[in-house]
Amino acid sequence: MTEQPWSYRSTSGHLAGAVLAGYKVEATDGSIGKVDKHSDVVDDAYLVVDTGVWIFGKEVLLPAGLVSRIDAEERKIYVDASREQVKKSPEFHREPHLGDATYRQHLGLYYGPGGPLA
Image 1 (cartoon, rainbow, N blue to C red):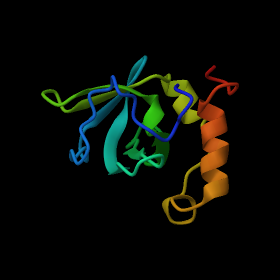
Image 2: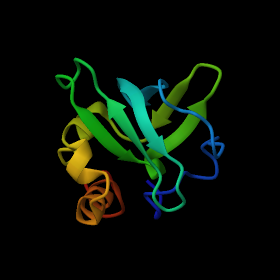
Image 3: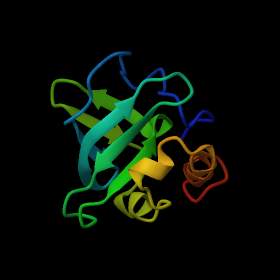
Image 4: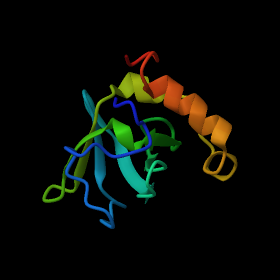
């Protein structure tokens, strides 16, 4: 992941204002679900991914810095994390966590430099 976990990489192919809801999300080793919600806010960009039956219907929050590539034709987003790394990420609950700076910091540390993905 980049030094800025809450911003899209300039090489990801992300276009500000693009609607990503419904895009499939691919980890380095397979599918993890579909985008349910996303944010393009500078320094606060993220994807909320509905994992479906893979993790029993849970959602995960992925910092935009994990996005390595967006394929608009195939409607797929590729992230630099394995399925297991996503599965073991800090538990996400939409209501309390979307606006929680402490949770975001914890998640940024998990996925950022020095975390288990480094």
